[in-house]
Length: 351
Image 1: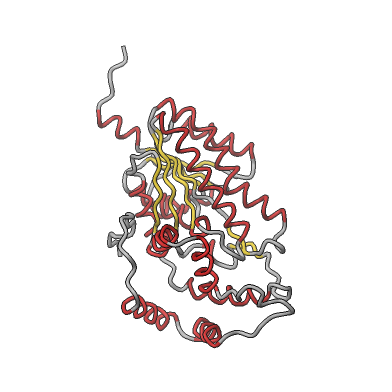
Image 2: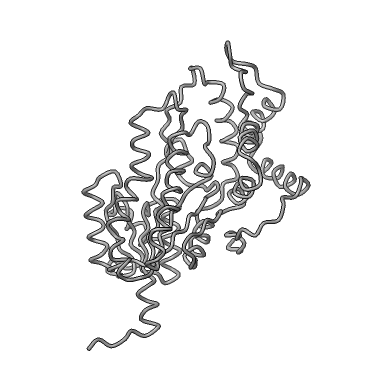
């Protein structure tokens, strides 16, 4: 006769989590945070040898620590996905949480980006996560509890120009997650989507981004303006550790479907997207990104406006502390955003 499990035993069993893309950026910070919070973490990554060594150095975990397990995973390789799912179930059984964090970044407009880039983007952000989820769901269904967490971004909320492959893949990820939530909720499993703002990780750097832009082609004006404004915005990127705070809170979700903005910029985007019509959001995005009005590029490029030239000068000449001060003053004296009931996943002070 099998004795019933105590509450403490169930709690320990449920605190197991799989995080993809755990070797760097948001995945690395999240693995460290949750390990320190007492979770049993399976860190899935393409190169577990070096990645796990870095995680052990950061957390202080011993090589035989059963709460930090490395698994090789390449989301573009079906054989790797199947092997990873088998290793996960052998190590921890049914995970309580499966966090799809792994991702790649790319810059390029629809006309210029290669089909190979589109295929790789969807394989990494959609097809690979779907395959891994399908492999682990039977055990999670049998356990009757758990959560699938999808890490999206602002680009998944709105179709953003000049990042079409990335934006499309993140949008598809969110739609898949909402569909999945309706299917697995009756079995006791929920879905959370985390919309991230700008964080200081490799994915926003030149080295971490596949660049399919042609700065000498017909879209050069768009590339020049958006490149300058994008680099300006990166100066205010938050640390990955602050994202990990949001993920830790999202793991407390109990409803069948939840969607959270992690960071003030992501929360403001979600609020604006609810309040403004699609045409209004499109117009606002065009103005923020410095995209010329409809028809402006017929017959060739147009010169930069005064405000655009000022933005270029500020982003390339002024030191980061000065720009940070300007942004702070703009937020202090600018119009206040309307109140929202959306949870603030950065309200804790973890400085």
